[in-house]
Amino acid sequence: MTCTLAVFRISGMISLAAGAGEWFRWLTFPFLRRALLVGVLVTLCAALLGVTLVLRRFSMIGDGLSHIGFGALSVAAALHWAPMPVAIPAVILAAFLLLRGSERGLLRGDAAVALLSTSCLAVGVLAVSLGGGSNIDLMNYMFGSILSLGPEDVWLSLGVSALVLVLFLWTYHRIFAVTFDETFARATGARASLHQLLLAVLTALTVVLGMRMMGTLLISSLVIFPALIAMRVCKSFRAVTVCAAAVSVLCFLVGFALSCLLPRGLPTGATIVATDLAAFALFALAGRLRARTRVH
Image 1: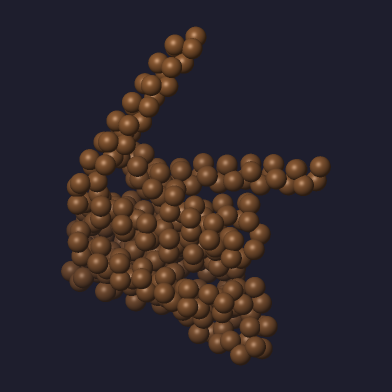
Image 2 (image 1 turned 90 degrees about the vertical axis):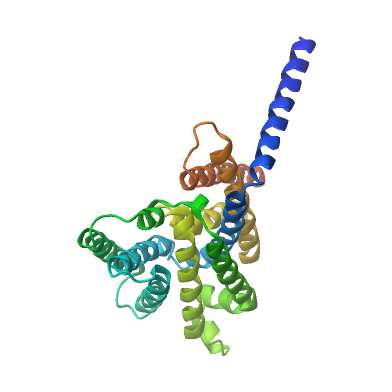
């Protein structure tokens, strides 16, 4: 029996070492290094912003903005314009309208997101059809293609992610105040409207970057899952923010590695979402167990 266990342990260690060796060998490919770098940056930015968006009941804004971005990209492709210079301003404007419109009571948050997202998605489909059929770049934005990122995508992601992280850390305390009590924040002199605009811009930039990695259909998972996972076990805003950032990056790395190492070559975006779902289940169980321990 002991010999059998020893054999299983040795074989397991050999398999693990072989998998790790294969993984490090794969990292010699430039396209994999680009995908890892961009993925870590985008997931980190999405998790930090997602905490505020979930607490303000705008958890589906990532999904809505990705549909709006797809519509803008489709129109740009149909008109033979550069896609990103069209998509980024359109998504920023939409994010600002969604946040401000809900604040003024014009439409509830979920209704506004549904109205704009479905309308822009329909416009995008019509633009693709009128433009002579689907375009491979648009399909990459629709379903995600992280392994097709080029050097220009990396530089764009580095610049935008650095901007998002610096502005978020710089305005962290003001974002905290506006998130939990906007009236009190205004009374203390905080420019709530300016921070609403800043949050809209940062969210829009992150969503546009993430569309290329996760696709229009899955990008909202990067915003929603990390915050919900962290809230299962953490209570303070700072703890939730830090935990969400760490879990988001870890789930991306695990999902990305699984999609590359498993023999069938699973889709990267879907594998990352499945990893997030597994993490949510584990953290929810841990939260329940801790709550029962405190009661007893």
